[in-house]
Image (cartoon, rainbow, N blue to C red):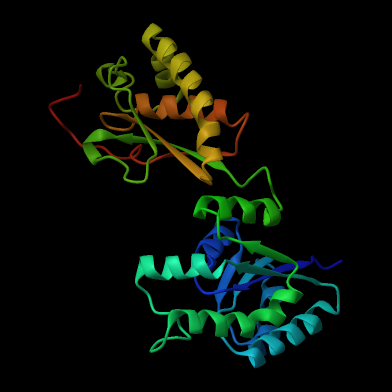
Length: 294
């Protein structure tokens, strides 16, 4: 049986949070499209089915035309008639007072009131969208929601994986090649015994058992590892609660080939028991001579 494709049509009032919504759907693994003409949808779905690589799509509609919305509703009905597409409409709304406040704060012009009163544009748009709002499976009033709360609402309703929406990246690196700019947590392990100064280990990496054992056999390493893992297990739930979809933990030593690699491997494997984890080693293959091997 052919796999059912999921389609979410994201629409609603200008200023109600469609930008936050589409970013949230992207983080959930949806293929997002902004303002595709309804006439192109059948061909698009045909290409999606042939590729077999896309099974979740979020279609953002932001045109203020009643004819356009009538056309999209008809098209959705036709697409869903064979049971291969599960289509839902998400309508984002907000009170007139909140929309006015948001436009005033951003100093933007309402698209339907470029040369007139802001309230006139809001009222016209609300009238144009009243039919599509009635047909929506989910209406979210964002008047009192922060961007993070809207994100949580979307995750709650559209995250089909649940257990894989948050993942951890454990990265090893060498300080002499620069800090990883995308790291959320950076830990310096240059205080640990350095295998570089052991002749038989100098040209190996932390991915090899002799180097790994040398790093882990240190009492300093044991104490550090236990305390750092306790810290991580206490703070990671807080990152999840804040709505982060990923957390990058960077472990650094001088060259990024021995100590940081071994620790990243051990930390990553331990965290993988509780979270989806990917381990990578940015500088493990680099060799850059230096006179300072602290």
